[in-house]
Length: 463
Image 1 (cartoon, helix red, strand yellow):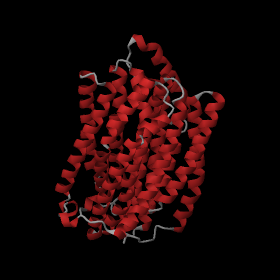
Image 2 (cartoon, rainbow, N blue to C red):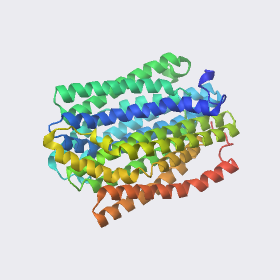
Image 3 (cartoon, rainbow, N blue to C red):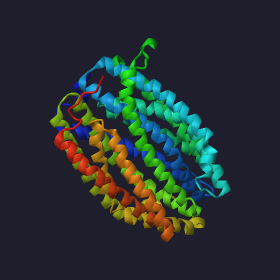
Image 4 (cartoon, rainbow, N blue to C red):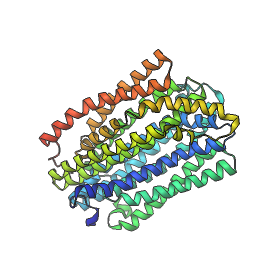
């Protein structure tokens, strides 16, 4: 194992920032990857706002299944980090083999289930416009083919990050982003394939990124990631531990995105301009939230590695360092959104005079949402850091419970406020703040208790 990959030694802030920075940059590229889909449709589709609405209506549905894949990989990565910190190479290899084999089986099953349930899902999504519903169906059908490529990339990226190598997965994410932009130019601008072109660009770029990171991993970490056929095994003991992490992580992601999906069904009852405005505004949200999530993820890996190495004080200091970094980031983002919210929203749609009235409506509705959300951005920075402690010590069930609390109050508040005020944008923003408030009230006392008592931190459950 390479010493420079270990986060069990050296200056805590330096190690954490060096590890977190590629993750944050990666999240920016990932969201640029997603945002470019909106932008290219907004500037080059025949009916830009309707095309954006189609992708916007599809994303909450797609993200439920993508979140399952992400949850599997994050859950597996926590235990991999712990074994790497312990320098337990034999169990580390069996852990990786188990995660890949079981993960592939689960993702194939999920993909088939998604395709089978696509029509019923669309029925309950409240997309009333027939043409819009057809485009949503086509987009989701194509993208579902790429779920397996998304898993392969994410599981290998998670493994590399568990080794302390966040730079390599960033490089392949950048390549994937560049490919997605290139294919979007070809399919959407040149071939005029619009929503279909965006979907094809996504799965082709995912495929290339997945194959590339597998080849790279086997070359750079051949002592760990190269297996003979007989070495691909499912270790039942390791599977039990990994499954406990992965299931909790998956449940947390499912609850989060099902909640967002339920809110989107309330938005979908309105016209396509409102749907497009909501999609644009929440895309800006996601762009900035992702960095906070990745700072939290870096902290979790740091805590897990140091827990595995039995450096408990260092693990706790890493949590506090990650928390301070995240809060500074939150202040910066709050300032940017307050100053540039209108400019950011205007980037999503072309300046074609024929759609200027519709564009103005989209921006007005988007500002209604962002003017409230901009004062709440410190909340996700805090909650992601609090959750990083529980992820790092392996208490992913608490992450699930806190997310469930947040989503319950967020969804119930959104439905109530939207129906009372008939103002979906401001209602959704206020409901998001209510959800975060209850999440913090749930998490903060538990973090203080676990932090002070060292509960679950001083515990070895590796095998």
